[in-house]
Figure (tube, rainbow, N blue to C red):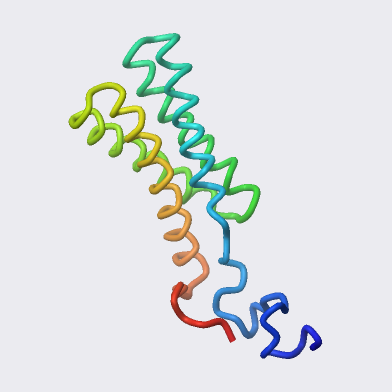
Length: 138
C-alpha cells in the first residue's frame, strides 16, 4: 500500500486528515522532569540541606521537563510549568506521608505527571483542537 492510502496503518500521519497528527508524543518531558527533580534534589541537598533539596528539585524538574519536551515537541512552557507545579505538590504530599525521602520521591513523581499534563494542556490550547486519545485516527 502507498502512504496515500488512508487504510494503511503504517502510513505517516497527515495534519490535514488525522486529528492526532503532531500531538502523538512519547512523554520525554515526563522522564526529563522526574530525572531532573531527583538530580536537582540530590545536588541541592548536598549543597544546602533540606531547603536546598526543595530548590534544587524544583529547578531540576523545570529544566528536565523543558529539555525532554524540546526533543519531541514545541510545548516547553507548558511542560516546564507543569513539572514545577507537579513537583512541588508531589513533594508536599510525599513529605507529609513519609518525611524527607517521601518528599523526594513524591516530587519526582509529581514532576513527571505535571510535565505531561502541562504539555498536553499547552498543546490543546495552542492547537485549537482537543485530542481524544481514544478516538481512532483515520
